[in-house]
Length: 201
Picture 1 (cartoon, rainbow, N blue to C red):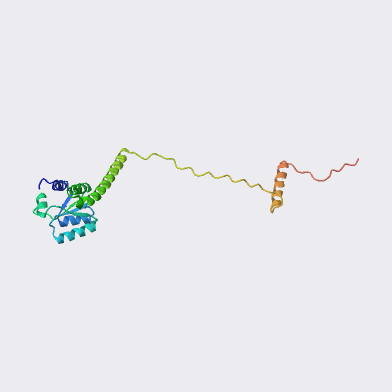
Picture 2: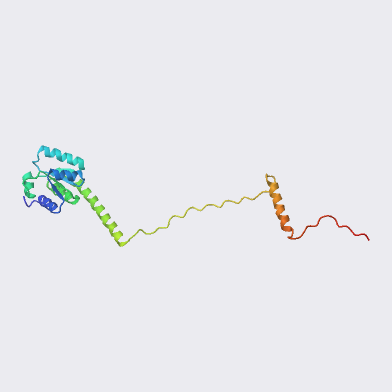
C-alpha cells in the first residue's frame, strides 16, 4: 500500500504545497475557489460526505471517493486519520483522476475526462501568459498597420451667378457696372461733361 501510485502522487502534491488535509482547510480552499478536486476516504462518515457536497457546491468543485480508508490515507499523509483532502493544482488533479480511471474506468472515467480538459485550458492560459511576459521583456510590439484612409468626397459643382430673370439681378448688374466704371475712370482726372462752345470771331 505505501507504494501505491495514487498515494505516491498525493505525497508529491503535499510536498509541493498543492494538497489540503482536513475539513477546515478543504472548506477554506473551496470557498476561495482554489480547490480543483476534493477526495474522500471510502469509510468517511455521512456528515463528512454532506459537508463535502456543500463545499463542492460552494466552490464548484468535483469530489471523488478514493479506494482507501481514513487510516490508510492518514498513514500515507503522516497522520493518524484523514477523511477529506483537496488538490489545489489542476495538473495534480487530472493526473490523479487518470490513475483512478485506469483502475476503475466505469467509476472514474467521466471525471478524469472533465479534469483533463480543465487542466489543458489552464496550461494553455499559462503558456499565453508566459509568452506575453516574454514579449514585454523583449520589447516586442505588434506590427504597425496604417489606418484606413477616409473615403474621398466628390467635388460639388460650383454655382454660377445668374444676372437675368431672378430676384436681386438688378443689384448684381448694378454693382457689376459700378465696378466697371470705377476701373475705367483714371485716378486723379475729372470727367468732362457738356458740349463744347465755339468762340465768336
